[in-house]
Amino acid sequence: MRTVLIPGLGADAELFYPQKEALGRELVVCLPQREPLAKSFTAAAEQLAHRMKHLGLTREPYQLGGMSFGGSLAVEMTRFLDRKPQRLMLIAANRTRATLPLRFAVARSLGGFVPRSVVPAFLRGGAGLLARRERLDAEQTQRLRGMSERVNYPLLMAGARAIAGWRFNDDDIEAQGVPVRQIHGRGDGVIPPVKRHVTDWIEEGRHLINWTHAERVNAWLMSP
Image (cartoon, rainbow, N blue to C red; front, side, top):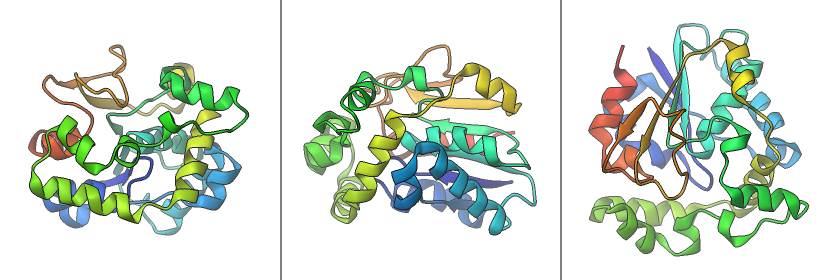
């Protein structure tokens, strides 16, 4: 079954390199665009959903998911997909507006001003700092540095503002009729896990579990 994944805020397709190695051509990574994000989180989700349909990614059974910010986008995209995914697969993500970290509510209360705390940790403190926190190996640290050097800052800021205004709750998810699975590291300090939403735990995991525990995340993605 095809898997469509959306990367996190400030990240690109490199975020899913371990999953690409495991899933090969069955994995498609879709990247949000700045123009719709500048309008709203919903506009960005709608544009991604239309792109998926245009590319024929919904013709056959598929699963849709994302990492962190990308997982929230995947949730919102279900509103606009006539052919719903078989399931939503969320990696270290939020599935509702109410469970977003407080820093995003602060951004909204400031009229769209994006405080430093919203900027991804690998940009705020440098890739090396996050690499140490996540216990990345040398290759992973180098890949993280590469992503930090490629960051599109206008896109990043548009994304942070957009998700600050996101509206989605548990009832909205129920209305879409799409099963949700959510995997989360118990020690995630970037997107703290919400126990009632997590279906699969990585006890020793932090935020970048799709890198640090790639085999487990890959097996989870490919599970029946």
